[in-house]
Amino acid sequence: MPGTNGTSPIAVRPALRGLDAASQERVALALTLMTKFSFDGAAAERAPTAAAIAQGLHALADDGELTPELRRLCARLQHIWATAGREPM
Image (cartoon, rainbow, N blue to C red; front, side, top):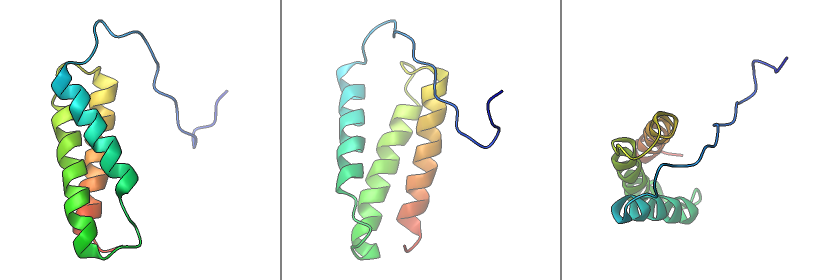
C-alpha cells in the first residue's frame, strides 16, 4: 500500500489533440521564466518575474484544452508563484 505522505504522479494519457499555439506559448513562457527566476536577486527584481509566471499559469488553468488534473496543477502553481511575487524571500 502506498504511503500517505508521498506525492502521487499525475496519470499520463494521450491528449485528444495537441495544444493550440497560444497554449504552447503560455507553457513555454512560464517554463522559461521559472528557469530564469533568481532567489538571490532583490525582491523588487523577483516580484515582476513571479507575477508573470503566475499570470501565465492562470491563463493555462483557465484553458479548456487541458485535462482537469493539469488545470488544477496550473492553479496550484499559479497560487505558489503569486505568493512568491508578494512575499520577500
